[in-house]
Amino acid sequence: MKPSIQVLENGTDAMSAVRELSRRGYNKDEIFVLAHDKDQTDRLAENSEANKIGMSEEGMFDSMANMFRSRGDELRSKLESVGLTNLEAERYEEVLDQGKILVIAKTR
Image 1 (cartoon, helix red, strand yellow):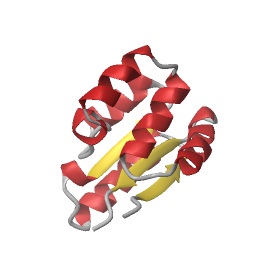
Image 2: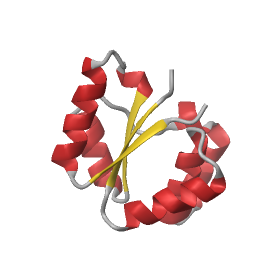
Image 3: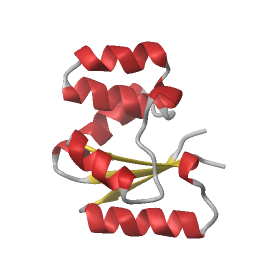
Image 4: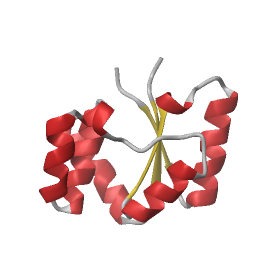
């Protein structure tokens, strides 16, 4: 199943979206945040009830391979690991390039 993805303008909006998903019954393991900047992704995940897309979603091989990829390739790999097609991942990576933030919820 495809995840539910919200495209947000900034960290404040992303935090609000995560709180709303939590209020609706999603747990931390079902909510992910992703920004183009790794540090911003880390801060958002750390300060909200959300996760970063990591080894449990990507698998060990892809997670390790990401250490050698460009940021764009890494972002597309992460998006594909949560259920997006290559084309969808490319489109969302372009959105991330524009400074937007993604809040991703696993579909129930």
